[in-house]
Length: 65
Image 1 (tube, rainbow, N blue to C red):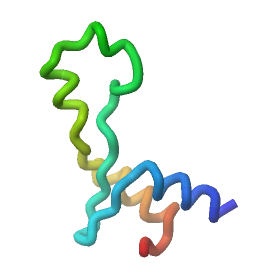
Image 2: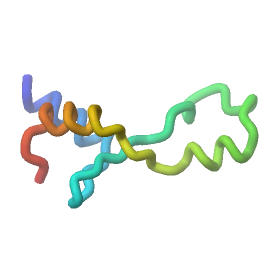
Image 3: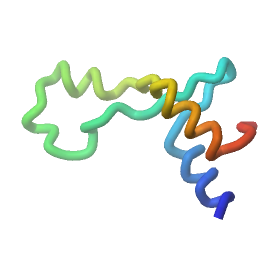
């Protein structure tokens, strides 16, 4: 099971060389007609994952590349 979980995490997150992990911004998939242009543009960017989430993700993945 470890291989599947690792691959799923690697596909959804970006792992930087300096140890930071990036994720997609929330709210991009549906109900976009309600959102302002500024909200849509802001959600295109990658967002930094919090410290405790970073620790958990690194533990799940093990050594990254």
